[in-house]
Length: 225
Ligand SMILES: C[S@@+](CC[C@H](N)C(=O)[O-])C[C@H]1O[C@@H](n2cnc3c(N)ncnc32)[C@H](O)[C@@H]1O
Picture 1 (cartoon, rainbow, N blue to C red):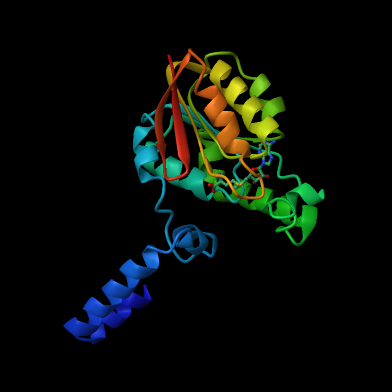
Picture 2 (tube, rainbow, N blue to C red; picture 1 turned 90 degrees about the vertical axis):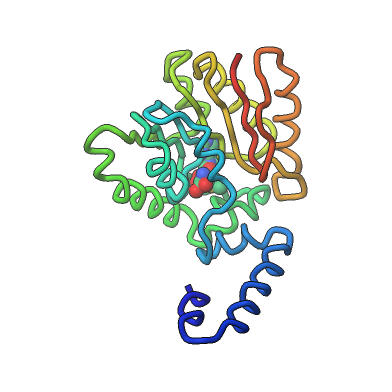
């Protein structure tokens, strides 16, 4: 935004310099994600993934937080039904010191309750017309309540610890139709969740019933055969 305002009032050389500086900044590893977390940049990592999700489909997002990606799913995919699954439960264990729902949520459970309430308000129109369903609970418990072969796709972005991702993958596959997609975020090592997502995804890729169709921008996408 700042760049646009200034570009209206300054000359060509300055505009070129700003573009050059922006290009250099973009090359810093992880900078886009930090900018997104600070609300300074649109989520640039996942547009291709949104394009892979079929329109007018039935899908689920595991791990909703403030609903930013849910909102993008609604706008890009126009799902027939979107199930949002999140316990909005604060985790005080030291393991979660650097998690958004652990140590980074400075106001503990109050903060999580506020996020939940804000998501309900944010998607009120979609909730009223039954396009969005909010399930406040752990993915393991919520997913089990759906029939097998129910979803066209599931996006996994909840607890990134290995055992949780493994269970999310297993259950999501069972609940997704043949030909459907199971995707997720943060296929990357060296974070607070260690290599939890990578390990679970790499193991899962060996499953004969699935095809790994994309591994890009920290995202993974499997297709159920
Ligand atoms: C990184 S945030 C999700 C961000 C969101 N997908 C987005 O891109 O805007 C992780 C979320 O996972 C939720 N979560 C943690 N454990 C979970 C579990 N077992 N099942 C479902 N959600 C979980 C947390 O409450 C938190 O809101």
